[in-house]
Length: 192
Image 1 (cartoon, rainbow, N blue to C red):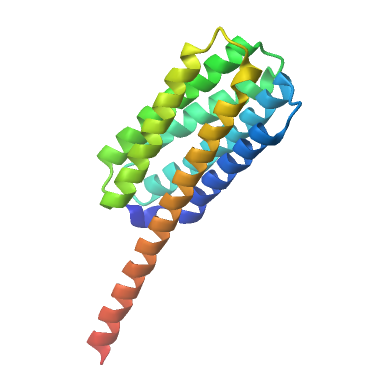
Image 2: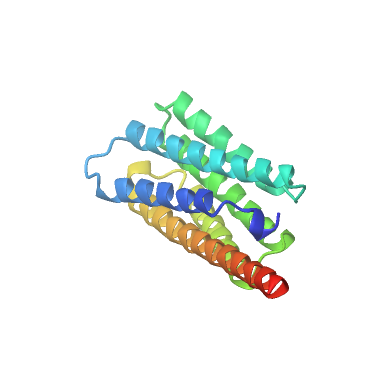
C-alpha cells in the first residue's frame, strides 16, 4: 500500500479515537471495570474498522493490503469480545488488552517494513508498533493484578498511540499535498 493511497483522515481519526480513550481512562476518577471494558471495546472496534477501510482501499488500488486487513480483523474481534462480555474479570480484560496491543504492535512493525513508506512514515509506524508491543507485554505481565490499578498505564498508552497516529496522518497529508503540487507544476510547465 503506497502512502499516496492512504486516507490520511482515517489515520487521523484512529489517533483521535485513541486520544479520547486515553483521556477518558485518565480522567474518569471512579470508572468501573465494566465501563472501561466497554470503552476499550468501542476503541478497538473503531480502530479495527478504520484499518479495515484502509485495507479495502489498498486492495481496490491493487496495493499490498493483507497485513492491514489482519490488523483490522484483530481489532474488530477484540472489540466484539469486549463489547459482548463487558462483565469479564480484570484478569481477562488485561489479557485482552495485552494480546490486542502485542498483535497490533507486531502488525504495525510489519506494515512499516513491508510497505513503501517515506522514512518519516516508516519511523512513526515502527515507533507506534514498538510502543504497542512493549505496552502489550507489560499488560500481559500484569494479568494477575487489578485492572483498575492499571488504568493510568492504559490511558498513557492510548495518548501516546493517538499522538503517533495523528503525526503519521499529518505526514501522509503533507506528502500527498506535495505530490499533488508537484504534479500540478509539471502539468503547467508542459502546457505553457
